[in-house]
Length: 145
Image 1: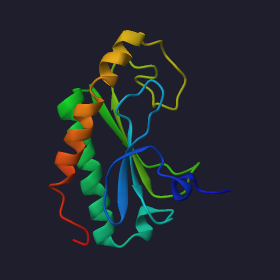
Image 2 (image 1 turned 90 degrees about the horizontal axis):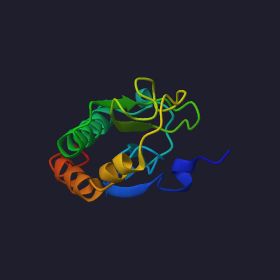
Image 3 (image 1 turned 90 degrees about the vertical axis):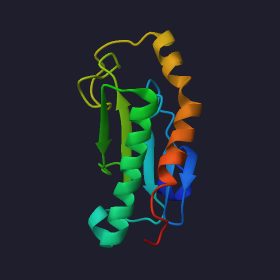
Image 4 (image 1 turned 30 degrees about the horizontal axis):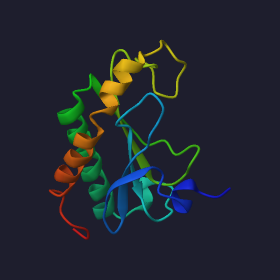
C-alpha cells in the first residue's frame, strides 16, 4: 500500500520547513482540522532523534495555539494514531460541544447534525487561521535546532 503522506501533501500546505509540514486537512464538518506531518517515512515518534521529536511537538503546540486564538474551540484534540497510515503525523483538531461527534473522537459515531450556517461561520475563519499558524510557527526555532 502506498503511503498517502509520501505520495502527496495530505492537505493544503500552510507551513513547511526542511523536515515537516503543516496542512489543513479539509475534513468534512471540521474546519481548522490540521495535520503536522514529518516529511520522511517514519512510523513512530520514538524512531526520530530527540531533537526531532521536540521540534515536532513545538510545531504541534504552535498549531494548537493558533487554533485556540482564532477559533476559540471548546477543546483541542491532539492525536497521533497512525494505525491506518503508519507515517509520523499528528492531528490537531478544534472541537466544539455542538460538533458532529462531540464528546467522542472525530472518528466515532455521529451524535448530531451541525447546521450549515455554523460550519460556514467556522470555515470563514480559515484565512485568519492560516495567518496565525504561520505567525506562531515563525517563532519556532529553525531546523536543525
